[in-house]
Length: 196
Image (cartoon, rainbow, N blue to C red; front, side, top):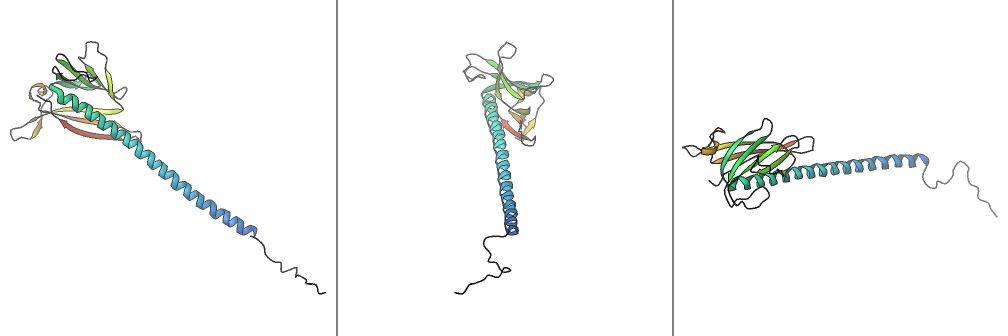
């Protein structure tokens, strides 16, 4: 019987060499890192979009609420600040709605005021009478009110706050809604006409 001898220098190769395994592990780690980076950036973009959507929804709700009060008003009573916080006071007739949405039985004044210390837009029916202010929107970073009236050419022009009660045909409202996305602020303006 004949014996087959294997050459000790030529061994048959089975499996992978250590170097091949290490190279494939490094390539796999790079691929896994790339997939992880794409996942994290997609998740961050989704979170940013969600926060911006919340800020825009806050603006839409605020614009709707403010517009509803102004449209129900018989007239703009006054516009100003208490030194820090901007406000508008509206003369509301019987049948209009107060801050909580209840119908008013008699004429009243509704005040919309930004409390800058809490970033809340508050509504008070008959301010100064002890009625508690209701928060209708937050977080608002700023709000401004400006009276407009029709000129002889039909265009809206600014009037002073003192003339607002007698000459205003529209109220320009500018709202700044704070978003915690990179400390940005969404600023929107809209024009509302009281029913007078």
